[in-house]
Length: 636
Image 1 (cartoon, rainbow, N blue to C red):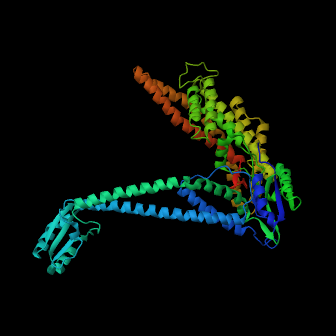
Image 2 (image 1 turned 120 degrees about the horizontal axis):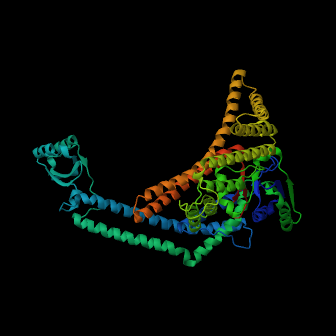
Image 3 (image 1 turned 60 degrees about the horizontal axis):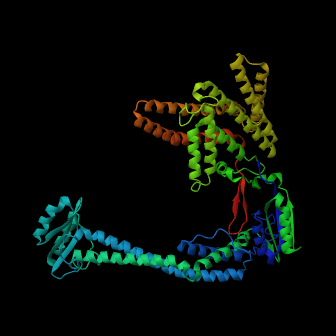
């Protein structure tokens, strides 16, 4: 519950012909995390499953493309009985999928051509808009004539007058047929004998030629009619292709056969995945990995039942040197899954490290309730989490827990949607004694930091880092330093003077930390070494103080919640009945959404920066079990 399950490193050796069945058995076992074998390539140079892996990869890729083409989701559950998939079966399946994919490719090519034709036709209609004011056969603008030279294009509007005068001297006429924002669209026509002179005029005036599409046959109205009819026909063809695509899976039992193919490939996946990790020599293969210690006997029994005595299974505990390589496997109740996801956002617990999920869940819910205590708002959060549980299934338990906590603290504060007269406070309203609220927040912060420091000491001892566990600023020396600060501050506030014992504890702890820093930086020059020690020692003291003061936000937000409610009621009291209740409703929505989101983020910040950063490395490896279909991650 508080740390990962004990692991064992196993090495399984067996006959090469039994390797596919062994891979399927390990996947059925569901608790085997394969790793590279400890044997050297010189001892076992062969990769007996490489050909199988390549065939599987190609077949799976083809099936994925076919399923995507028909918009079919692969089945979640694997059909039983679990049967071995031979290379012959894989080759046969690949040949059938290749035939299906060829038909899919043809359909995709047709659909792609229809989309291109449709897009091209739409573009033609857009171009045609420029010619709609003309009443001529547009085909004439595309042909070259022996007696008539015709140009279609655009000119800047500023050059139109001088241009018309220039071409008029050459016997040409300009017909304006469309006016743009900055350009005029023109048809220039005249005798071919003056074509050379007109070309130079066009170039000097900034002429840009417009190509008249070859599809424009007839007058513009006729062309529009033809293009519109063509669009309608393309729409019908696309609809027909889409209907055929959707209907195809139900024809000739194609969908069922594709599901069977998915089941087959799911059973083939374990051996294909182990192909890069399973090494062999002659008739012998070996594969290594990690399993939970409590699963060793079960795996031994499954192997014995399947292969009698034709295998060898060697298991050992992880050595201290490979702790960072051991995967972490911790299981939690589904109600803790949203908190698990938030922990994983920070990092994965390394093997043997304290799992912070339960501590995180309890402290997060309590701090949220203290900062956002209101019966009405808590009930709204709970109701919203329940109503949206299907859409946000991962975080619904978090919303329910936070809402219940908010309701409980709301009962203590006597607040219901900001009303403090509806329910009598079981304790007191935060604004009635702000200093007490601030004191409680500081006490909570001090306890939280002490707990995380003790967890840091425990994790360092588990990692074999005894020196850091005892002498570091986050170790035992740091904890005594912090206790000296807390007790010293309390004595100063209550009696006005310090006890010599408290001062002695603080000084000894600080000196221990400084000496440790001095020895840790022994390779640095004395002057620079002194500066580093003093700065890091000062930073250690200030970090404890600032981290403790960060928890004042617990009281600040509880006071802020009451203050916002008072502000809303003050504004509402200036209104008539309808305005009063409208202000109350809108104000509570504002508090519920904005303040609720801010509080959730602030609590998460306290957890990450004042908690996890002290004791949680978060650099572990998730346990990835070999399963049917694909490997599944079990980090927590």
